[in-house]
Image 1 (cartoon, rainbow, N blue to C red):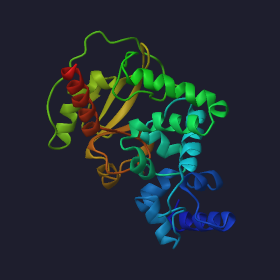
Image 2 (cartoon, helix red, strand yellow; image 1 turned 90 degrees about the vertical axis):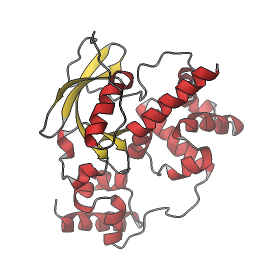
Image 3 (tube, rainbow, N blue to C red; image 1 turned 60 degrees about the vertical axis):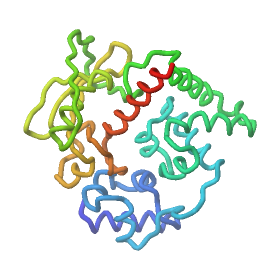
Length: 277
């Protein structure tokens, strides 16, 4: 779609809703896709600015009730505790109000359960509470985790592979895109990946990813030092399953992003906790 067609679709949707649409509402009411917006404008906020529209709820304080019901709705819809990128894809709000209230994203599930208990919402959200309890049990080490980033999406139209028997992790710190590839190789097993191929063409590589127990699926990966470089390089998101980067500075990314800086931090925290036991 052209830039003018996208702007016309946004304005038409705004007239219908009598306010600026969210990106999700735009996709539901028009032919405009997330990728169309990112490819043309860089971010959805930039698209709204060009249409002289203000993002819905910008600068407004969200109540705990609003945050709970939207987050719990996403949990119920995807039937698991969402990673940040999953909430950004399905939720109505950004991560900012959550981080301001609860700190790291991993603290959100327990805070939501406390709110549900305090406000007598447990009966209405029993399925969500059960998923929170399972998440907390796994987080506290009562259940083995096969990856630092759990809950990958299973693609039903792709074949499964058996468990690989000979992983070869490496250890290094990144300084550029090549360093990201090297560090990912060092952490691949812990993150639930085994590389099949690295190449000079786009996308950079293919890997087998642990998606459930001993089941693996093939994914395509593009390595970037910063996630937004994917946009700067003009890559086609339809041909890539995920971006692996050192720093995620592109929250509107149309594909899943794995930020190695966060994964390294989680690994160091877990190591420190074990040392203190």
